[in-house]
Amino acid sequence: MIELDVDSLDFAKSNGLVTVVTQHAVTGVVLMIAHADREAVEKTVITGEMHYRSRTRGLWHKGATSGNVQRVVSLTPDCDNDAILARVIPAGPSCHTLSESCFGETALGADALSELDHTIAGRAKSLASESVPTSYTQKLLRDRNLRLKKIGEETAELITALADVDQAKISEEAADLFYHTIVALRATGNGLDEIRAVLAKRAGQR
Image (cartoon, rainbow, N blue to C red; front, side, top):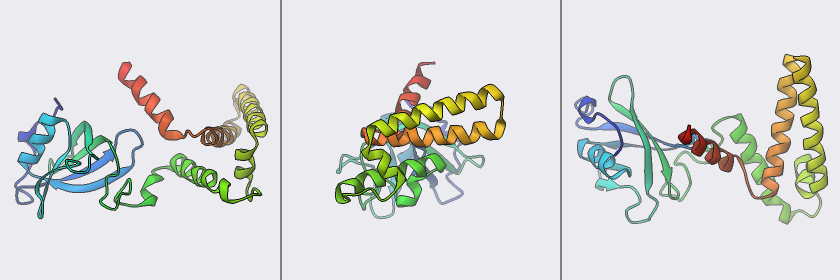
């Protein structure tokens, strides 16, 4: 059962409702914002899947008809106890438009690394429609040997910077290595989400 002191929530402040900010527990992407009353919160805690209260739908079990349920990882009240951060693992799109996030593509780049991964994924998808690479990233995506060579070079340069304790150089070389590693991941059909999932699983085993 999910841990949450329902009695501590302030439902009175917003006429029986609390605001729910739903976030992907692995990627950090904000998926949607909705509301819940006491019944919805209690159902969420008991079932381990998100329930909301909608003006039009009433008590609403997310994904009950579409199958796109949201499995709860944690529920955390804010400092005023009138809002909840719900960290979830979604089974599919969270938005009725069938987008991953109700906030569109912009939300998928939750940080600089996520935005980089999203951009590289776009370059990878465009390869099939372009016979000649139009960017350095696409050149890397097409050339396995070049990708591996660059990862080796960037790794050696980072090691040297670390050995020299060159703070500025360390950050630059680490950024270069992250970039080339993400390109190599995308070339094999993987990305940061797969890495996050592994790290999240390991964190649960500590």
